[in-house]
Image (cartoon, rainbow, N blue to C red):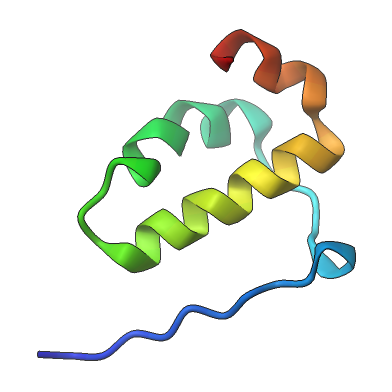
Length: 61
């Protein structure tokens, strides 16, 4: 079995997402994944969206 590492990104080091609409479309799939690395990437996307695009996330809540 291969190993994958997940790196925690400090909030002050988070960068804005490239494509807000595409990130929103794939967010729930990533969060529902069985692949822990994909889940962590999706969680980082949630963090980025909440910092840089709060209004875009309102429809998902």
